[in-house]
Length: 410
Image (cartoon, rainbow, N blue to C red; front, side, top):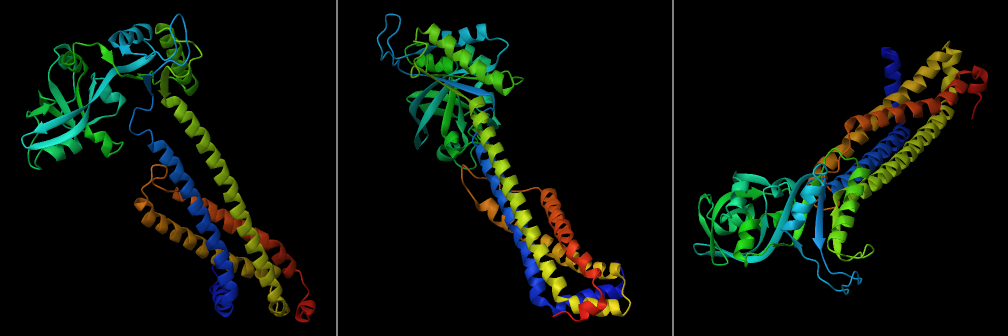
């Protein structure tokens, strides 16, 4: 294998047969190039689907009241369902082991003002658990705590984008007074959110404070919770269905009324995404195998042509005393060299293209297209080895040809 004369002959053959070398190399490089792009694209789609859940805790459930669509228990259809603080206490009391975090949410459009700067935003009145359910990240200061809720304090947490709108770049908003719909609030924190810029244009205040400011109501717009993180997918989906049943019973809603309460269970979304991701994975594996098979067939065909083309050369070598194994080594090593260089060249070009273009792709359904290097290296090695094995049969056949027959070949 490390015979200097042997490798000199190989390089001489490559230089002499440039077109044949190019076709062999291109067949390998193109197959690996397409395979890398395919796998990267599939991973990009899978990452895009998964990123849709970055904004909230993966085990979260959002419960929204709506309007009944069926008459039931003496009530006509079209009745508006209204959640209150008692619904939160009911869930806490009956699902102690199933619920991890829970918060009410009361939202309202407001005008916020600081000195001469004014903006229109949405305020979310919540409890401290909201931070973990919405995956709110504190940039400075703190989030709401139980003391704020119990004392109904007029404190506020602002999003990063609101800070940029209302405060100067070098001004620390913590401790400053913000006027929200003619009520004064003290800024206690600035938050960021992995979801998007829109999420950073919210204001957070204690739900008890909001309810006190608006006629001492106990109404809430929405219930957010996270279920026990130890639940498997089936248990999480079952828990969401159970919540819907008990809340319908509590608010005297027809069991078959699908419009009165909407429950958005992330477990169901993950189930759909998981199924689709598996389908994409199976498709990519199938197409990848077809690409490798096409490459193997291409390499094998080219090797058959090479051996046929060099029949007279093989006859001369055997007439001069070359052993069959030497003939096989010459053909196989040349093929290994060309396919290896081409395969890793195609892989390198595809990876470079992904690294250059991938970060510039901004799409909710497609992000961070990538593929593990080990996967592609293994695929390249398989393609090279399988291609060589495909050419081994004609190489063995050529090594057994009698010199006189080979010399008389056309």
